[in-house]
Image (cartoon, rainbow, N blue to C red):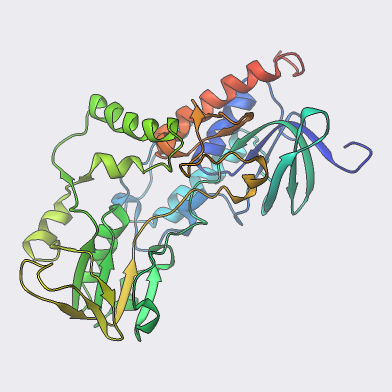
Length: 367
């Protein structure tokens, strides 16, 4: 701590989800000591990243594409146990096993230029002066709500998928689910088991894929997201370009008439939603509803980085690998092409490799 009361750390990691823990693991592995050379700050109340906030009926067996953190497999998990519990316990054990000493709950309020070429990280537990920042804040704190004509007139319940707590809240109701991603489909299927009726609405026709998703297809999908990031555009999720894996549960739902997609409605009314004449092929112009669930995704939580002016005119933050083009001291992991669990692992390793080069003259070397 310097004379002004600001603590110093060579690296500050913001966020302790998959990407943040992967970065912390590689920092520790290469000789950086927690609370001496680097610090991990997490605003969540407990380990688990965004997984700890998932709805209780999303059991571990229903999770798609969960990749283990580096250095420690997740084994023996009960597929019928809530994913929030399984992955929360796994992250907790991971932090303790590798002695990562995550500080929580800590809110990072802003990151700005500080003295001596360092970044000043202002937080709820005080300020840190750091030579490099790994930002792994993900998207959970920024649910995206679409703005739609008539939305304020609806007399039923409107909620975002981040506030979904399970299908029981919709028993006997008429429910409209908006969104074409994995969460939208999972929640639609659950709600359809107890609701009086469901209507599924998406802006674009959903893309379902059958069979295995090979490495070549994965690289091609990631490349599409990387291209947007290189051009300074807001990233799309990897899932948005890979499509939805067709599961047995989805096939059954399709046979029951649940997985029938309708185009985006034109306006919300007091009692439901309405389409312009001719928009729907079946000639229906309106549906009444008791609830509208917006499974419309999230946006990157980067507001605390605003003082650094990393945002490009296109609306995104341009990266070279994980390094911000506008400020090479800042690495964004779990952003854009690294927003999957396996991508987050790779990004954490890549960020640490670059940071070691940046800090090489000043850091302590491993024994």
